[in-house]
Length: 298
Ligand code: NAD
Image: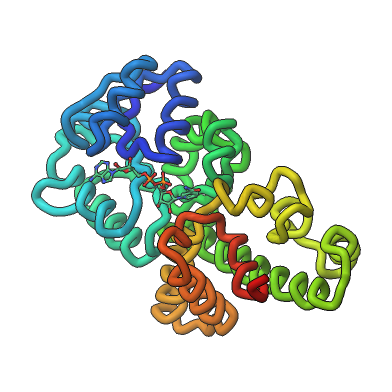
């Protein structure tokens, strides 16, 4: 069993850390929220005062943080892990951030002799709690092989996508597609239902025909079609529209940097932005609430 520093104990990080504890690892945790640290400490982790204390002397340092600025702040600069740590844990960043920032951090880490991988996840809070996340990993073969047993304690599918940054690119491709398919499905359902078709029948026809997808099989955006989807509980829970918008922003910026063309991604970005601005708490609703853009007010 390993000594692991875990930084960022939010919606995803806390259940992931819990699975590492259950697997028998020694965990040193840090979050700017003292409450989040105390919660994990009550379950057997050691709470620390800062990220450096959490990672110092550990074999692995895992970060699960909100965005590029925060991950860069924790990793880089005079006060960052890369400058401050005297030992060299394998750095595992599970946050979703831009491939560019990831590569910049990886270069800085390599210059100081650290191994580092990007390992963003898919599966949401449920996958994090159940230990069934998918990890998309960027980094060297050697670092991937070192990290794999630890990632297996938190996930089911662990894929080496390529060099540093490739995990983030894979994650953005996946989420951009999910956003586009969700919006396209919502548009088609609204078209059929506006002409009197039954939502369940239309969904079933499409799910078993060429429009079938993860969205129609597991995440139907029309309220009441599937009892356990966010749509059927007023779009509560699930994957927040604000997070999907963040990923679309990253995907479109990444496409610009890479000289790639993503017209559907850019259109989806505009649509999710429009929905985000329609109500005060719209960003917190599940991303299937994009359905509301296509539904006439009653
Ligand atoms: P979150 O906001 O719930 O948690 C982030 C945690 O980081 C918070 O507890 C916060 O206090 C802590 N934090 C912020 N700044 C810090 C710092 N400087 N040092 C230490 N801790 C700090 O976010 P989340 O939903 O857990 O998402 C984390 C990452 O995973 C994001 O990049 C997100 O895009 C990605 N992700 C989220 C989901 C999801 O469904 N929530 C799914 C897949 C990927």
